[in-house]
Length: 335
Length: 302
Image (tube, rainbow over all chains, first blue to last red; front, side, top):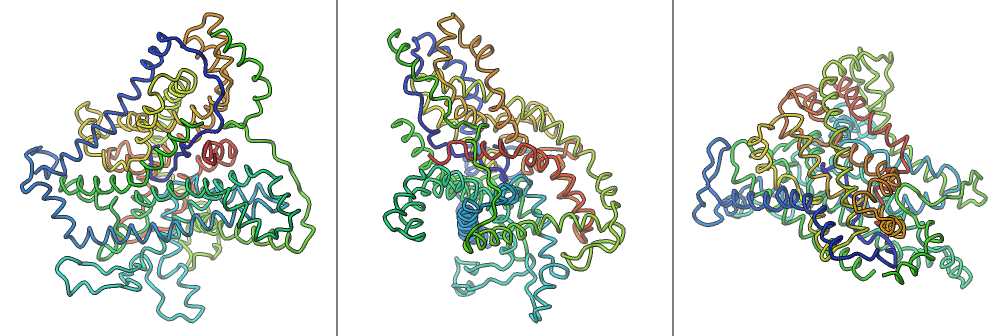
C-alpha cells in the first residue's frame, strides 16, 4: 500500500486451505523460491535496509541534505535526547495519543453500530452500505478540504452554534485551547505542553472518523455474514432476547473483526499526515502538529531530527503491527 | 505422490463454492417494507445516519457549484445562482496534474498487480520451505510509515537521476505496492483448487507455462480487485507526490492541496478541484463497489 489513506486488507488467515498441497519435488521448490526472490530482495532493500539507513542518519551528525556528514553524533543518540525535550515533540505525542483514542472509539463503535443496523434493515441495504463506504474511496486531501470548509470559523458549523445562542464558538482548527488539561507546564523543566484534548484536533478527528467508519462497517458486515444463522435461531428457541443474543453470540463472533479494525485503524491514526496538512498544518503552538508533519518540516533542514522522529513513529507502528502479523502467521500454520 | 493426487481429486467439485475475492456469496434480495415497529426504527436510523454521512458530499458539490458568486456565507446554503464557473478555474489549475496522476497510477497499478499475481501464485501453489515466514517479512513493508524510509528513497532516486520525475514515483509505488498485491492474490489463489495445477503438471507444464496458460486466465477477478485497490491507493497518494515529485510531476492531490494557499482560500474553486480529484476513484467505487469491498475484507474475518 502506498498512502496513509488506504488500508490493506487484513493478512490474517485466508480461510480454509486446500487440504492437500500440490506435491512438489525439490527442483520445483527451488525454482519457486527463485521466482519469489526478486520481490523479496527489492522489499528487503527498500524496507529493511532503508530503515537501517534512517536509523543511522538519526544517530549521525547529518543535518542538511547537500553535504552528507555521516560521523556519529556525540553523545550517542544525542538527537533523540534533543527532540524529546522539545515543546513540539511533546505536543506531537499528546496529539497522536488523543487523536488515536477518540478516533478509534468513534470509528469502531460507529462502524459496529452501523453494521448491526444495516445488517438487519429490510430495504435499501445496498444504498446504506455504499454511502457509508463512499468516503473510503476519497483521498485524505479531498476529505481534508471539505471538512476544513465545514469547520471554518465564520461560515461553517459555528453559524449553527451561534444560531443556538452560543456567543463565542471555538475557532476550531486555529483554536489553541486545550480542554481538561491535566498539568501546568510552566512549573516543570521537562514538560512543556498541557496534556488534555486540544479543541483544534476535534475537527480532524471527525473528518478521519467520517472517512474510515465505513471501513469498520465493512469489516463488521463481513463478520456478521459469517455468523451461522442456526446459532441465533437456537438461542431464540432457548428464550434469549435480542440483548442476550447480541451479548453472548454476536459480539463474541465479531471479535476477529474488532481486532482487525483496531490494528489497522490504529496504524492509520499513528501515521496520519495528509488530512492534517489539508485541514490545519501544525496549528498555533503545534496544537494540531503530528509526527508526520514534524518529519516533513525537518526534511529540508535537519535530516537527523526528521530521521529520529521517523524511527520513533516506526517503533510505535511496529509495536502494533508485529504482534498482529505474528498472530496471523501462527494461525495460518495451524490451519 | 500418485496416491495423494488421487485423494485430492474427489474433493474438487464441491469446494468451488468457497468464497473468494471478486465472487461474494449471493445475497438474498429483499425489497419488502419492515413489518414491525422495530423494523421501522432500524430503517429510520439507517436513513438518518446515511443522510448525515452525505453532508460533506453535499457541501463539496454545492460549494463547487456556487461559482461566480463565490462561496456561500453558510456551508449548508444552496447557491442562489448555481454555475460551473468554479470548475473552469479548477480545471485550468489541475488538468496538468490530473494527467500526471493518470500517468503514474495506470502503469504502477498494472505492474504491481502483475508482480503480486506471480508472487501470490508461487506462495499459494508452490510453497517452499520458509515461504510463509518470508511472506510475513514481505508484509511488514505494507505497514511501515513511509516517513521512515523517505530520506533513503529520496537519495536513491537521486542516484538514479529519477528524482522529481513521474518515473521515479511509478517505481516507488510499484515497490511499496508489491506486499499488498501479493497478499490479495495469494488470498485469491487459495480459493482456486490445487488440482488444476496438478493436472497441468501431469500434462508436463512447468511453473511458468502453468501460470500463463492456467492461472492467468483464471485471475481476472483477482486483477480487478487488486487493480481497484492499487488504483485507489496510488491515485489518492499524497506523501510520495508531495515529497518526491518536482512541480512538473505533481500528482493532483498535491496541486489540490496547494490551492488552499497561504492567506485566503477560494472555497468554491477548491471544492470544484476536490470534485475533479475525487471523481475517478468515486466512479471506480460506484461501478465496481463489490470488488472494492471484497479486496478490503479478503481474509479479514477468519
